[in-house]
Amino acid sequence: MAKSADHFKDVISHAKEYGFVVPSSEIYDGLSAVYDYGQNGAELKNNIRWYWWKAMVQLNENIVGIDAAILMHPTTWKASGHVDAFNDPLIDNKDSKKRYRADVLIEDHVAKIEAKIEKEVQKAQKRFGEAFDKEQFITTNPRVVEYREKAEAAIKRMARSLENEDLEDVKKLIEELEIACPISGSRNWTDVKQFNLMFGTKLGASAESATDLFLRPETAQGIFVNFLNVQKSGRLKIPFGIAQVGKAFRNEIVARQFIFRMREFEQMEMQFFIRPGSQKEWYEYWKEKRMQWHLSLGLGEENYRFHDHEKLAHYADAASDIEFKFPFGFKELEGIHSRTDFDLGSHEKFSGKKLQYFDPELNESYVPYVVETSIGLDRMFLAVFSNALQEEELENGSKRTVLKVPAFLAPVKAAILPLVKKDGLPEIGHTLVDELKCHFNVHYDEKDAVGRRYRRQDAIGTPFCVTVDHQTLDDQTVTIRERDSMEQSRVAISEVADILKKDVDMAGWLAHL
Ligand code: ATP
Image (tube, rainbow, N blue to C red; front, top):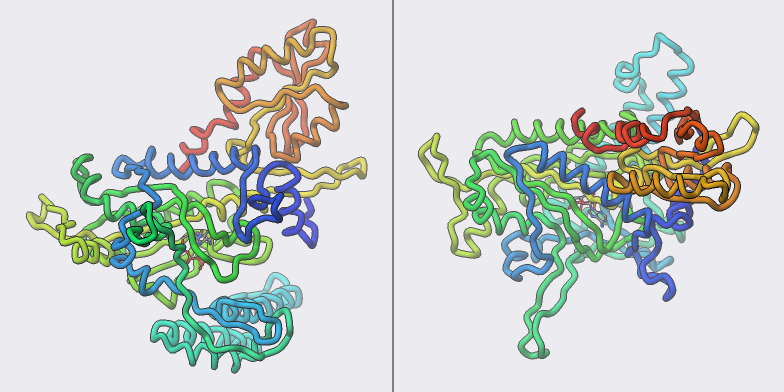
């Protein structure tokens, strides 16, 4: 099971070649950091979306889902703090004229130090064999200790300076760490400036009367402004949650790394409303719950880690990221934030409307506290897709490219392949397609040799290929070939639907959560 050195390039080209993801408006050379999902990508994305939605809304009696508009009253964004504080610190290199996020430059520098620590650990592990104690090594080895101190000091100082809006010190830190531009190699930097990430647009027919609006930079605010509507109409009792999936827009300074950082993307967010004072407990609960959801997909426990925040957003009293090992290293996939009563409290102030909950057990009203889970659907897609794409060397020395996505997420669940285009085999194939297509997505394919058809299905992640051959005419059996093991078994055609459903139905996966 090999992943080539240039795995990320393979991921991008495979996504395009097999109808998963392409640059938006590509015939006009594309639009930077905006992407379209093709026929297979849309299916995979829908399946991930539903797995999240069902895990949140269907499995939890006290969580409901809504679908709020992208355009919102402009005061929303003053209340949420986005007009004043939704900024990224940017810095330009004067020689390459390239623009960077100052915090990302520092974080990338720290990631390099962490990679050095990892190398030292691996070397020592080899040297000491079974007797190796990692914890002891990283706390006592002088070189590793020095690396760790450097990394921690850089992150702490960056967090402090950004919190104090001390952009001069952020620049100083970049200079002191001797960070060079990856393009020009020079350390000739401009000052650090703040840049607001919201996209503006206008509402109204004439230029004079038009109102300035923003495309929402997060879906969360659509939940907060609907808090009372949902609570009252659903007669919901605290603790309860409101979930939503939808588009969000950010004018990212540095949009790169394919669908990892996009200007138009989708978020899957859930705001959990709780009693003030219980936020620590719920924050820990949701950290755990969300990690469990990720691990249920079987992408490998070693590919996830928590990263607790040093620098907290203006609304948070605790925050942690679930990071995933993307082809370019560990990066944020999901955020879990303890948002206090910041959002509801602020909307109360700006709207003049009470956004409180009467707690019958305490016999008092209060502004609820909130714990949020927020994940990018596109980033989740990239996690699943990049992890699944593999090149395998087969016993006969040939190679195959296979997309080992969890069976229930696959765009196509089964391909029906008549061995030849005659002798009544296509008719049997079509009848089987008609039976299966009400349950899940199936493909019918009768072109080319069957081996080539298998390869085409492997490349889009189809978990099962069902082949109809001449024996089918005699005994109504077909062969089922399983994608990962490539093993084939002969079964009665009447049993195919039930056999496949065991693996491809989402219900079975949800039951294990
Ligand atoms: P980052 O630090 O990577 O910019 P963030 O901390 O600003 O992300 P949040 O505001 O917490 O992100 O958004 C929640 C989730 O939305 C992120 O964990 C990520 O999965 C997703 N997300 C945020 N920005 C983007 C983007 N530009 N493109 C794709 N997904 C995004």
